[in-house]
Image (tube, rainbow, N blue to C red; front, top):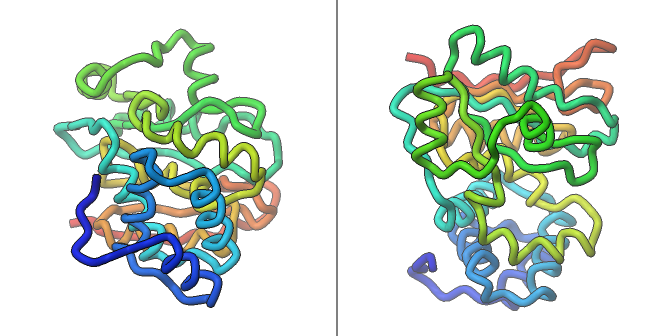
Length: 248
């Protein structure tokens, strides 16, 4: 479990959220550690995620949640600069899995890609579904994924294998049935923590929040949102882009 230098409790954090008070990263790291450790009850998880969503998540809160999840993850060491191409989903557009196709093209063009994803939750197909249909093995561990990146220029981290502690929140997420902070954490918890990313975010309020988290981590990134609501660069109208440049 994550050590905390001060006392945190669910009543204290929930009280702050209900009052509309922002939490700091240490607070949300503690909360996520409670969830990932299996200590938090289903009621506590649901109350926290709904209250946080109702208040509106800040960059510090999202960063703390991501750090809490990563502390329970199996990590991947990629010995070179790499990029993730990923979207949050949730645009309800039922498009094909564009980010996975883009990741394959990116790798073919010579940029190492370390992708992280899962099966479909609400869309027609997730990254894992697409890659599995193409014959890609999903049950690879950290060393095998790193080898794929080194030898083939692309590797895939199947989220349930690298974030097994997420099982503690799965039932709650399914039962409450509304977007929560969990819907925006996927692009931020890649087990390899690549230093570049193209991130699609359908939520207009959350796109700059995610860009700020990536900036604070030193990641060079483009966060994009089609102005038609897609979590992609769209072809039907303009696209909003948040640029995070840490190039040297």
